[in-house]
Image 1 (cartoon, rainbow, N blue to C red):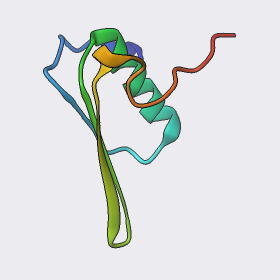
Image 2: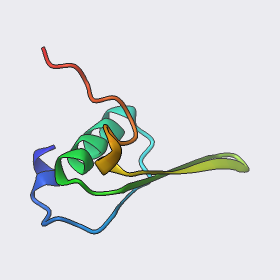
Image 3: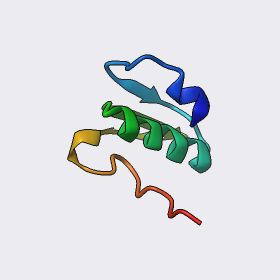
Length: 67
């Protein structure tokens, strides 16, 4: 999350990664920055798009438990 925190508060973040650990890190950064997250993925001819507003809670995913 350190690299994400180097950003000055963006208006929105677009995530197109295919790695769950990276998605969780991006989500945590968006929650910390109170920034909406748009995440997209595709497999074959299908896909999904989701918008998560960090102001409404934990964003896209539950934040990992500490410890």
